Length: 348
Ligand code: SF4
Image (cartoon, rainbow, N blue to C red):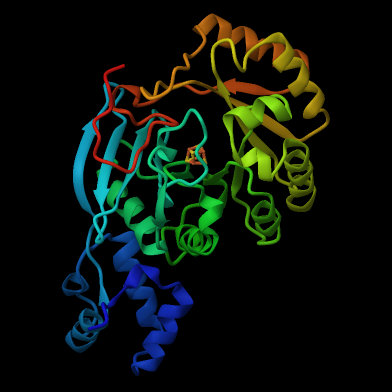
C-alpha cells in the first residue's frame, strides 16, 4: 500500500491545488498552513476550524506527525541539540541556539554528508540520503516549540549535509520558511551554507531570493583548501571565488566566508596575506570559526589571543572579520560537530 505523503512536502500552491481537486475552497490551504506552521499542531484532528469531512480526508491522504526525538542534550550555554530518528531509522541532528536577542535553529539537510571535509564530524560515515523538505521543515517546527526566551527568528542551514546538494528540497523548504502563509521568517534571517558547489551557487543566484549565503572557504590557497576540503578538487578555489563574485554582482548581496581556525594550519601570517589578496574588493565578510574538537581528528584550535591576532591581520588586509563564539561545544552541538549517529561525543 502506498504510504501517504507528508503534508509538509507540499508547497502552498500545491496544497491549494489539492483543495481545489477535492472540491474545497482554496482558502482552506491558508487555514491548514496556519495550523501547521503558525500554531504548530501535529494532528489533523486539532485543526478545529476545518469541517470534520475535510479533517478526515486529510487524515486519509497525508501524514503529519512530529519527528521522533531520540536524544536531547542541553549545553552549559543553553544551546540544545536534538537527535531525530526519521521514519526509515536514519538520524539527523538540529540545534537550538538562544541568545539575548534572537533564537536560531541550525538544521540538517541530508542524513550524513558525501563531501568529507577533514575537520567535520558530519562527513564521518558518509552520506545516506537527502532529506525531504518535510523532514527539513519538521526539524524547524519541533525546535520552534522549544524556543523559550524569544520566538524562533533565524534559520541556518549549517547542520549535517551540503544544502545545495539537496537543492530542490532545500528551496521548497525555504519558500515555506519565508512565505507569509508558512513560517513567515524574513529571507535575510535565513542562511544557506555551502562547501562550494559552484553550479548550484550559480543557480541560487537566479532564484531571486534575498537569503544569506555563507561559503565555507577554510583554506587560504588552492593547496591548503584541497587538503581540508576534497570538494576543492572538483571546484577549485579560483573558480569558487569567481562564482562568488558573480553571485554578489547578480544578487547585490554580500557573501559571508566561513573560515576555520586550526592551530598552526590556517591562521598564519601567510594565510592572512593570501586571503587579503584573494578577497580584495569583494563585498564580503569573514566568519572565523575556532576549531571545535572532533575526537577523530588531530587538529587543535588556536588560543583566543592567536585568533584575535589573526582577525586583526585580516582587518589590516581590508577584510571585515568576526570570530564566532562557539556554542554547545560540551554537547557536540557546535559547528562541525553534528553527526548522523547516536554516538555520544567524547568529552572535550
Ligand atoms: S563541512 Fe559541510 S560539506 Fe563539509 S563534511 Fe561537514 S557538513 Fe559536509
